[in-house]
Image 1 (cartoon, one colour):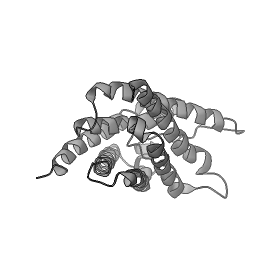
Image 2: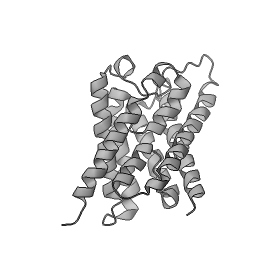
Image 3: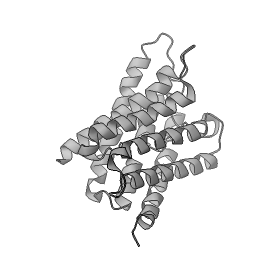
Image 4: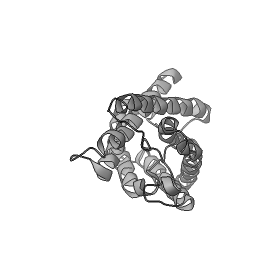
Length: 230
């Protein structure tokens, strides 16, 4: 598959992740009487990955996340030469998804961004969690996400079920960490919405690049040892 097609798939997939996941939070989570709540938003993020894994996994590998691409490089599953272009396509897809979401959401009378599903810590954490708590949460959650991805896509694992394990894994991660950081584990997802929220979301964005990449890199190292046959 050509690099341009891989990048196109990553753009579309990350666009869908942000529009579907963050869109569920912005448009549906707090909707009067029928709000989907934390469970619904968590499931929405899992479903975006699950659906895209089947749709584009055979084209690009369906990373949809700079941290995932980094973890796969360190785990020996992805070419370092393609890392930069993948990250750029993912970030652009995330920004495009956030842009479409903003255009839709702003069509409601009295619209305010109200955080716009951005990630944060301290006073911008849904539960008021500290910087340290947010850092630990994002590192550990991304670490576990990459362990799930590396394990589920191992050639010894049932290939057809990998998207299910990965999608459900992301759902579980959101159930745990939405109260802490509004759940990132994905720098592209965080960047897209932060650009439209502005201000505090941009000033705190560094954490949601640093922590997921650290967690993913650690997982790449650990799974290289863990998955190696004796």
